[in-house]
Length: 124
Image 1: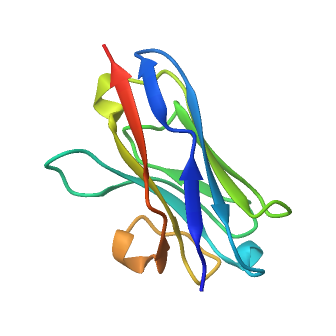
Image 2: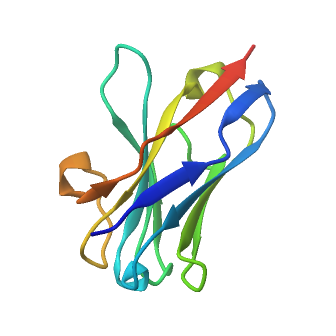
């Protein structure tokens, strides 16, 4: 069993930055691909970014490419999402997720473990 705990959300003005963190329990973190998803009120959960178990490959949705950066520190069992140039449309609950395999996916149903989410609000 893997437990994921997100932190770092908050209120920020448009154009600002936030860094989300996701701390994972267990000794198999380094073998798991990780992803970030978000869900705005009344909308479906959508893919934001993903990273392979080694951190060697990263993937982004078109809406965040060039503004967000996903990274991981396997020694600390933590994955990060650096969010720059934030826009009001980035407002959502952000979720960290883990797969039981090393390669990434943009599909929520292919992730086995989920955090509780952290709220990000971007004011205009």
